[in-house]
Image (cartoon, rainbow over all chains, first blue to last red; front, side, top):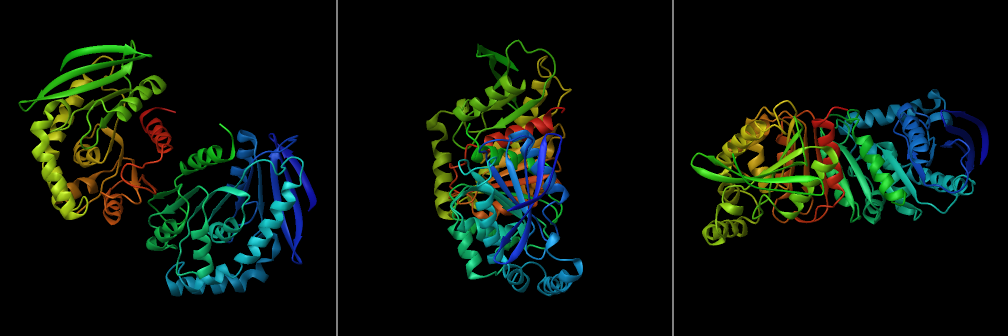
Length: 254
Length: 254
């Protein structure tokens, strides 16, 4: 884990890093309270499709968790995203995905399988990132770890979380089972930790039945689905307050 | 509105009252902070089937809203419930309902229609109760009014809330469209206020598709469904914290 840049603002220190995993350089970021020392809860945030580790809403939420809750929060660029490829390099992949989405009428079948081809790589990268983060003095391995990821962050996060006993609570959403792969469904069914799953009732990308089927699949005894009207990008802002409570409940002691 | 009994404990005053509506005596209760004066948000709480206005969980939540949020909270015995009938008098009705539930395999068709036969009466009684409550000095008519009702409290609350422009936010749940009546479905579709709808994913009384259809029917642009695993009586305790935030958001000024 090589740190390349560090800056502090409004009580939060943001550190950019690179980590080499299976020959690929994975760019990441970790936020923590300024002058943080010692172990603290860690939240891993998986960005959405065509987004990146420093996306506006993700970074704003991460900084708030550092200042308001004292958490460390980390994000990495997913395969094909962010600083890992130039727009020119990734353009053919996204063009294929868009064609498949149009043909399938949403995230079911072909486009889901195309997305999940990178899930195993993403899983390895997240696990290696978690190893490296827990070796940092201001993160440590003594406190709970959570995961938050919507859309692409859920398609990649579900196999990762299923494989990772260090994760004790997760927010997923804006995703569906979507006639995906046996591996993905098996991963969802094997998850036992508390889950908050957010779903848009009129999501133009995720067929409603597929979202309900994914919620149904999670093996957790504590799992809550929050469904709201509107499309893939229309989540109501009050859901963020619900994530706050969820992660405070599961990653901190009362 | 005749007050019969008043007692204060731990900062909350509980007042029992009777109100005569269309020839029937409706017993009710209103909780408010001790020594409350002047207008305040009002929450109306509709109890569940076979429960009553002073049911343990309902009363505990009501008292908490009085002490923690300064609200007035009121409940009335629904038709056939609480102090309105002796157990002997209501036994034939509940026996019929249980038979119909067993035959239908849950709240769909016959048992829903049997329940909704009393919805218009319940609606009139709630409206008259609201009139009377708003004439009280410590409630007034200047502040928002909310409604909370699960199960029977939703079957009766939906037609009431649909007819009542004074209600500005509502929590419903543990109910479904259930091949009910055109009036009930029309009422749900006509509702435009913010709704939080709680649903149990494995509810033995409410078929899943009927619960989803009821959530779908609400005409509100702001409506959220919270679904959790478990049966009709298995709601997780953390949902109460979500109702708190919902009513604080909608019944108070920030």
